[in-house]
Image (cartoon, rainbow, N blue to C red; front, side, top):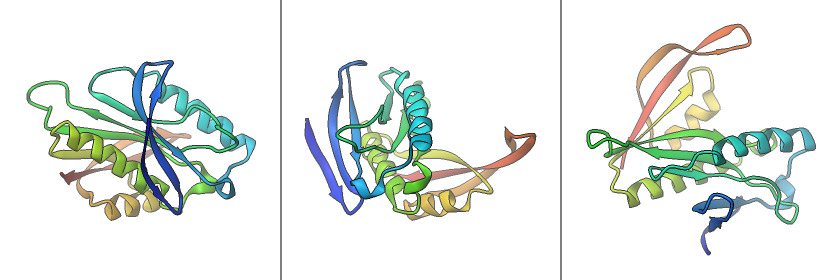
Length: 171
């Protein structure tokens, strides 16, 4: 529909998802940042899961495959649904294929989520991140998020529990 922004890591477009009949943001990356087949398959699996959500308070920013040989990054944001929580939004599922990490792509899609939230009169964005994921924590801090708490043993992966930092940003 229209170009939303452009930087060294690619171009973000406002688009219409014809399968789900909703507006989405698509991030197109330069060919130099492309990932291998294994990463592509994982990326597509997570994108399909995000695309399955269809709710007026959810803005999914996602990719569902390749377009002219270029892949996209994804995340999502959901606005609180009750009158008591409509002032806040939850950013979730930030995912960038491993080959693209460290290139500030996540920051760009997080900013797109924040812009969407602001357009809905949201005044606070929140997210959770594994306490051991220092690169992600630094990314969120660069985007203006601050830790406000820790959820102990929030995630269980490969037989091990991980704490999760709860972060917020005033909009």
